[in-house]
Length: 327
Image (cartoon, helix red, strand yellow):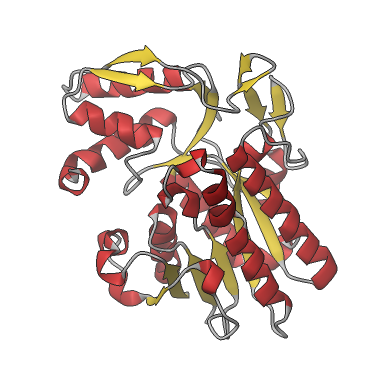
């Protein structure tokens, strides 16, 4: 039986991925800083009692924790739960850079090295220029502190792969959304405010673009990846997209959610444009990019199945049924 450890496994992606792998017959362990009794996303996925739970940070992981582990998915996003979030350079560095470095150092010294999967972000590639088409070969050139840490970890992973034989794959991930997502992210926050009957939403970086990807498509990607992971050693792959691969501005995104809200009998919000976040402007223009994922699609024989409208509608339905979690 294949043994998988998911760092950050009590989060949105971790819980969904754990459910998928358990259903496939894998043995799953979860590592997270959330207390076991508070790991409601694992309970919501129906698997809290089906995983071995390690209550610790990735920066505290030991070789003993990795004994017998075949695959480690490092999907912890510590920066999101630190004071000031990405506005704090110190916590951005400590949360996003040091835990992966520690994990790589531990694995480097192991005789039987587990395969490491690192979900990075398109934020690491925004800094090239406006209207860039991003491929799997696009070199990290971040324009934000958060993007810098993600790009730096990508390079660390590649160094440990080439220099020490650590088996790795890097995933460039789209902006994820779906059931159990955090309410401080744009999609979750906008849907939640709509359901709460708020009239106005203050939208930062209104014309900056994003590639939004639904949780169901993420999981179908991992379903293809994990079963044949050795074939992708050392590669950078795109775990991103929606049906049609639409890259939309934040304003366009809120317009889609407003249209869905109307169809569900809800009152849509009005949007008040706010200033751009640091790094969201390049050469004085909002972030604007395209994505070419043809290499990944051909290798994995994978395509996203959900349109933005389908994914956002399903996400709104989930929030509507779980409003008590977000009081």
